Image (cartoon, rainbow, N blue to C red; front, top):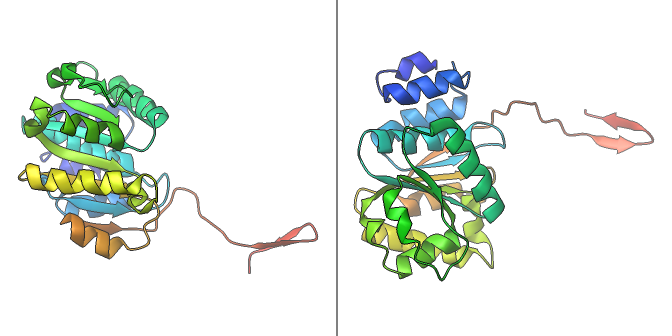
Length: 221
């Protein structure tokens, strides 16, 4: 699928940004997500290899939602360092088009300033804290992106993420959830629980080969 094939389905400003980034064609997982209803604000669970284009899937959903005036976007990541990295990347791309914030790491802070921002990057623990602080802008959230969603099975961090998703599904009507992961043990079950369409694809930018190393040589047979 070429980028031009969806030019009439995404905001013009988003199209300009993607072209500046040198994107002219969409990768297999991106095409599958679009066919699954991503641009129609349908929830999707994307399970594809590392570097296969999952972040762009999230951007297409989130940025479209903001630019079309639908509502706020929250991008959930597992680590503060990753939140900082994503925040810098999105600011570089979209500065001046909408307001992007990285929520503080202090789970006891209500971060009331976030009401003025459109795209918010934070950890699951922080977002859970914001909800418990009864943040007034929560009702304006329309798209939630969950990176590394397979951590829902993690013994330490999984319960917080599971409860967070459960609360969001109860509080927010017409919420679009975009789950991203390279490894999910039970993708069908998770997709059903999320109410999302499952997108699975094995394409990766560099072919993965398996072999056995012995006495200085690798046998790929």
